[in-house]
Amino acid sequence: MHSLILFASGRGSNCQAIIDYFRGSPLARVALIVCNKADAGVLPIARRENIPSLLLSRAELEHPELPEKLMAYNPGLLVLAGFLLKIPGTLIDAFPNRIINIHPALLPGYGGKGMYGKYVHEAVLAAGDRESGISIHYVNAQYDEGGILLQARCPVQTADTHESLAARIHHLEHFYYPRALEFLLLQRPETAAAAGQ
Ligand code: GRF
Image (cartoon, rainbow, N blue to C red; front, top):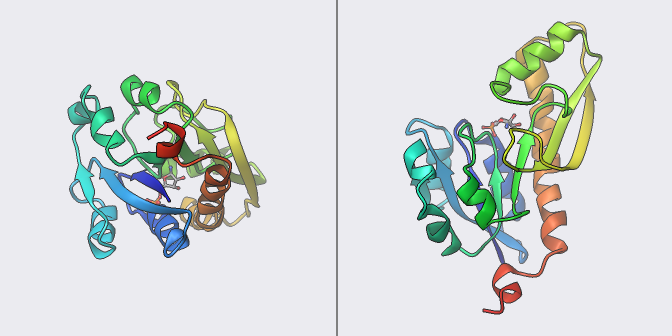
């Protein structure tokens, strides 16, 4: 059984979709939710689902002992779902190729610092693009520049607002993100076994 550690700062609808998808699965379970905002919607989700959560500040995220603390969960993947702090090099080095993010647009377009949430959708609408979508990618030291694992597309309609476009994008995210994680996990031996533990 693989463990997943989810990182989120917001509403947590992707976390909920991942929790629901793996509920009762023999492949994986959500072991921990990491959050940096005390009022984030994802924290009540963690409580309701009986999943431990870790509320941390930017300094705590960057603390050199955090990787070891997370290793105790033996995570198969660290999964970012609307986590707004930059992942420090200490974590990237400790979990090579095991940190995944989802971005609500078709990278390399509309990525980088400050491109999150409604700012992404407003930029897509302002550019007059006829389609948008999602990108699921590995996390490296640069925002939104790690290798892309999966992209899915949806139309942008002329009457769209950033809210209606976000809703369509969320739909794609909730379907594809858990399945992309499952696909990755199926290709990997369980972490502890791989480490010879
Ligand atoms: C998603 O649109 C995701 O692409 C982005 O942040 C948003 C999080 O939404 N990285 P939610 O908190 O999962 O509802």
